[in-house]
Amino acid sequence: MTVLDPKPFLISIFNAAVAAADPQRTIRDHLPAMPKGRTIVIGAGKGSAQMAAAFEKVWDRPIEGLVVTRYGYGATCQRIEIIEAAH
Image 1 (tube, helix red, strand yellow):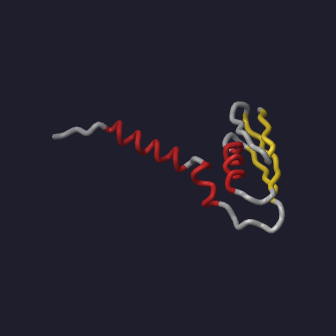
Image 2 (cartoon, helix red, strand yellow):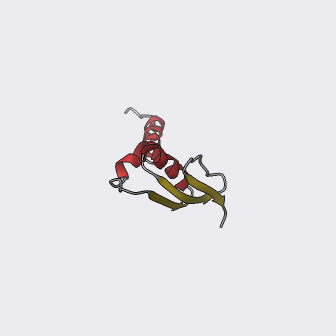
Image 3 (spheres, one colour):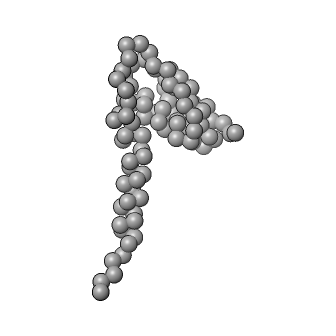
């Protein structure tokens, strides 16, 4: 009986899960149609700053907004303000 090493399989499914959750790769597929005016972005949570940064890269209309994330989870945004805070 041949015993297969589960480590490569587990690593591959872990990498697939991380890629599926990466906003830089996935956000474009989940956005609504662009409105005629500006877009206001609000968000909160550990992943919100990364999602805001990904959103800025794909949205070519006027946007502004505010995102609050936990200390250490910030991201660089040009048009959306990012605030790091605690509970």
